[in-house]
Amino acid sequence: MEKERLAAFSDGVLAIIITIMVLELKAPHGGSPGDLVKLIPGFLSYVLSFVYIGIYWNNHHHMLATVKRVNGSILWANMHLLFWLSLVPFATAWLGENHFSKWPTALYGVALLAAAIAYYILQTTIVRAQGADSLLSRAVGGDMKGKASPLLYAIAIALAFVAPLAANFIYVLVALIWLVPDRRIERILAEAER
Image 1 (cartoon, rainbow, N blue to C red):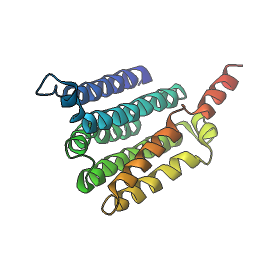
Image 2: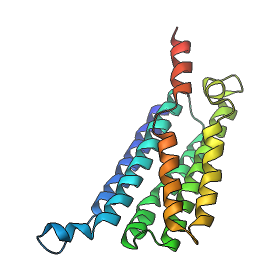
Image 3: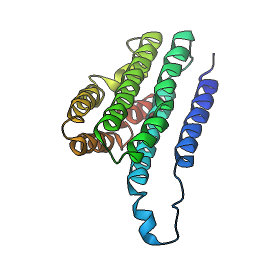
């Protein structure tokens, strides 16, 4: 199967996820700027989740650029990733509506951790299908960011019960680590074109 269909479906799901998140932002009940202040936690959780979905979209796009064809295993691994990402709007809404309290912060971390694991599974599935000498395999190598992120999420989930703001800081930190698309894949693709 050609990868374009997988990419198009994934792009559509990610666009819907962002749409759902923005629809959760409610207008304030009142006409003064002070009424907007009450919405700051919801807006901040939306911004963080928007960045995360953007990071996944960007890195997913880069990863699929290394793939020639997809098989059933890759399709299911991709669906697994999309499932966990589809839970981000719920976790985002709960986090924002409850002002970053412990349980919503922990659940948000669980959604991020599960998505990170699912992304790793997709990456591993692609490498297995394409071969150990594939473009993706050569590009990711040891994948320090990919290994550090789940560890940081796990720490943040545990920390959520004693210091929710510190846990949310870790979520922001991981997002900052991933904000720049994976240059290793861009380098490998550029080398392959030459």
